Image 1 (cartoon, helix red, strand yellow):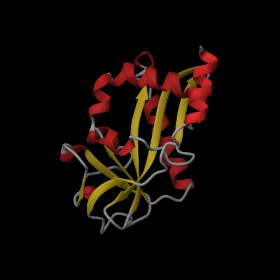
Image 2 (cartoon, one colour):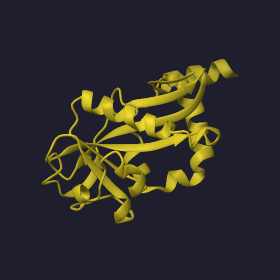
Image 3 (cartoon, helix red, strand yellow):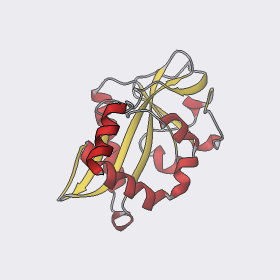
Image 4 (tube, one colour):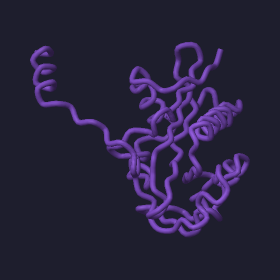
Length: 182
């Protein structure tokens, strides 16, 4: 049975392995990664798809500013295990995430992705026309979705990260872990 659950720390290693298999090491070179580096996903908006106990899919959303005055979420990465692709699971995962975004009251989602694929969810490049990413992006792949009419209508400027910063470990804890391992 396939289920979608909120991501937990227990999913981290399997999630990273899945992303490595699907996207390869080049995933760390993408402009969107600059917005995710050192940040936590938006609270309650990171999901894992499981088949039994096996992680087969992942999606996360990140808090960003769309220009200086507008809050939005950045969607990505989305990945489905190669063995499970072509079965509509990515579509189900994205729909689940967008429903959670709506329920949480967010007004807009932006992403960099395949325009024909994401158009089925309502994403288009018109709402991002006056926004810029902090690095190279093909304009036709820079898409947005307004969940609230006009949520990005006047947005202009750079997309920048605004989410919570990943907490740094305490030195005393690192030393204790090292001592236990020795």
